Figure (spheres, rainbow, N blue to C red):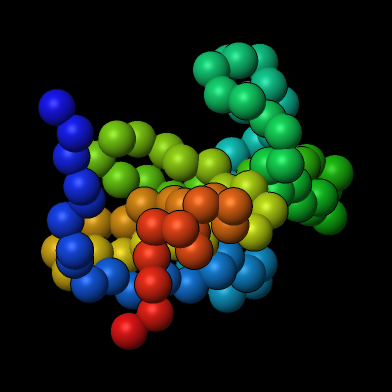
Length: 95
């Protein structure tokens, strides 16, 4: 069977550092050593203490790490998701 995504209205903003859009940060070393996600294009921030961290949002599926150009999607029930810049304009259209 084939399915079409339901048309739902969402809010979307492209991620920007220092705007408080993320739910938290995880040290880069923890992400690399767990090895459960691809690390290409993850946003990496060097803190003053030398620790490199990556921003993430938390939803019912777990932590979603932000990559360069990602959009944060907020549905009406306040559930948040991430959509890559490469797919965003194919999936969402401005209203």
